[in-house]
Amino acid sequence: MGIRSGSTCADPVFGEQKKPLWDPFATLEIINPARGSFTCVGHAPSKRRRCQNPIARHNRDAASNILDSIAQASANSKALESKLRELARVSLCLAYHQNQVDTVVAQWQWKIRSMCPHPLEEAQPDSCEMERQEREREALEWLRHWAQQIHEVLKRQQKERQDKERQEKERQEQERQEQERQEKERQEQERQEKERQEKERQEKEQQEREQKAREQETRNERLRRSAQQLREERERKAREEAEKERKEWDQAWENYVKRWNDFKGKVSTSPSPVLLRTSPVAEAKSTTENPREAIPWPVKSGRQKDLTASNVESFFRMAPTKANSPGITFKMMQAESLKWHPDKITGLFRGTTPTDADRMIINMICKVVIRLRAEARDRRSS
Image (cartoon, rainbow, N blue to C red; front, side, top):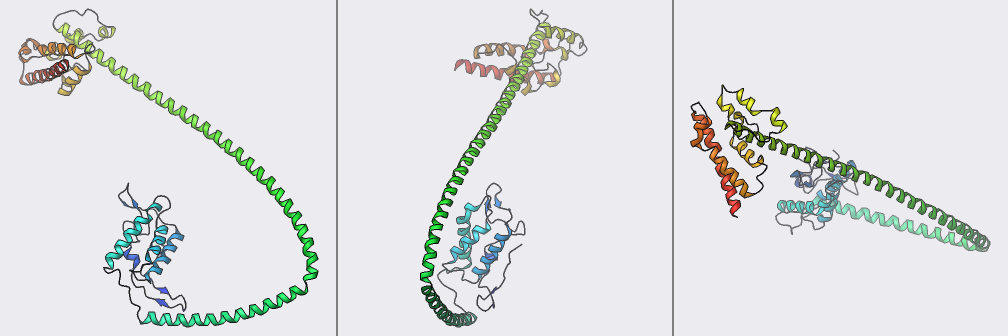
């Protein structure tokens, strides 16, 4: 996975393996327990969990080096915060959570403080650490000695080079002047060429920007037209559906009124062509064996089997086409309450003794009508 837990680090001078002072790998919870691998340490609010985006190989390697480095330092070190920030930057995915560096560092610092209850106490170096520091001092002293020797050699070489330069100064002066003249001419030519190329580049970039702007505007216009067409199509379909439903309710109400007139033995004054094609009289004649089918029930289908309180309420709210004011609605519901009053049940079931189920249906219709009548009365009074 490109990262190690609990590893030891080599001494920077003698290559000696050094035991870590604490385990930042486990303390900082670098491995995602949900995935069992090194994923982004950021928090994904939309998922309410740790981000599961993978970390690039080079960032995993960098994180491993940082963990090895801070493992050698005291967990209470004041210089630890900069290392934690560097670790957070390479442990957060570039796509979404680079803005959580401060939050992750704060969480890690809290975990470290929980691990080390006395942050002001610095860990004391052990005997191995003292020996390593002594070897480092000896190595540095040896390096300083050789640096001094190299400095003296370089100083002698510089003096010899300066002597040769003074000897050749007169000869080189003329060559230098000629070279300066040629160099000025060359620089002038290069300047003019660069100006020409820069001008061409700027003109080309300007043309490309204008072309891209025109293409983008064309795409945007196509998208706007497409969106407008889709919106208009949806609105048209919605209007058609509403109009179709309205016509269905209008037809249901006309059928209801016509069937009531026929049921009472009256003749309809203005039957529509649709009513002639779906004659309620013919339907009543065809159902003489079951008088309940002849009753004009207040539902959209007009059938007894569709009778429910919600269907009856929807019928009286949607079907009446002339109930365009609370006063008219109240009068209409008043008339309907007289039609469906339980005292009228004998007249509805002509020649048939109503059953308990029939009485429950009539009571249900009557309750819905009375409630709608009360609502219309309240609206009329307000």
